[in-house]
Length: 392
Ligand code: NAD
Ligand code: MG
Image: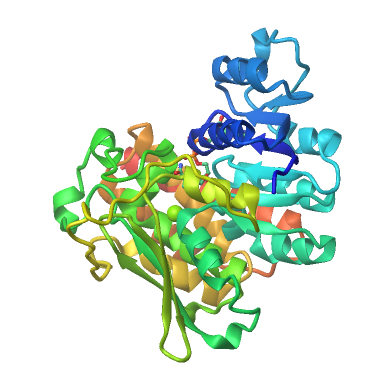
């Protein structure tokens, strides 16, 4: 059944954003008349201008003020750190779909605004749930909108749960797969001095820089464990993660009777993105198909928590609750930025994040202010820790 939704893409110039627009074009060729009504980006105004020419949105948002200085594409632009939330506020109508693909907690306000406007959310921006699941999930309930996972593992679990009913008691556990990132199979001391280029050389997925570093430390899987907790309403004991280097099987649901459903697909984000865009329908996809005769091996392995200690934070954050997620996420964002800019070594990244989480006590989340101040405190903690080490 062809559909014709109004879509806003937040983070349109990034890896998920570009893939989303490709899927929209592909669906258009199949006769679906999706309409891009808003685009939000950080600083890549060149790519944004090309997207404006092709998709003709009503309004755009540009977070970086200096990058926006010579914006003259003919479509008005909102500018500044709050521009993406303001774009949603001005453009979104009930029933629209917002693809949330901004990286980091910077995407949170726009997602909350979209939910309040009555929009469904296709969520790639996992950091919003990690930092503020306690605000996002009740808002989704209140507004009666759908929160559709884009992250491949969560799309897998979501797909395996279709038809399984809403009874969470029937789920024994879910398992998220992890490629293992750039340093799979390496020991902690071997990767302590790994370079940025080495950390960014992901074996199976092509993604933005932050999530690629998160994959190298396995912080990404910790974030995804927390994301799964919020999306599927499961406690920490019923969420597992396992290494699967081929990135073909994305997630498993084990039911109480011992039956296991799994979802497979090529490592191409256009498949889960398209499912979120056409849900609950399925139409012809645009990714390369799996050729099962060519797949020689599907292997699985335990996660090495000694080499990648940050992974344990996923379960800890769920158990602690409150602002623990905002603290973990912000400390990780700040430490990844420091690693990418050359201020800290790869080996220090996980230690700094874990120390920040251990040093900053989690408090309850009553509103956005609580999340914001926990986020700010964690970023400051990381800055001071790095400055103290550099000065020592
Ligand atoms: P990316 O760095 O390629 O793109 C990020 C996008 O957000 C860009 O368009 C950038 O301009 C924009 N942006 C950054 N800061 C902004 C701000 N303050 N305001 C407005 N826009 C801003 O990142 P990505 O790989 O596309 O990842 C996006 C999100 O999707 C992340 O949360 C990531 O964890 C998640 N995700 C990505 C993949 C993937 O395959 N890339 C897979 C699963 C989940
Ligand atoms: Mg993922």
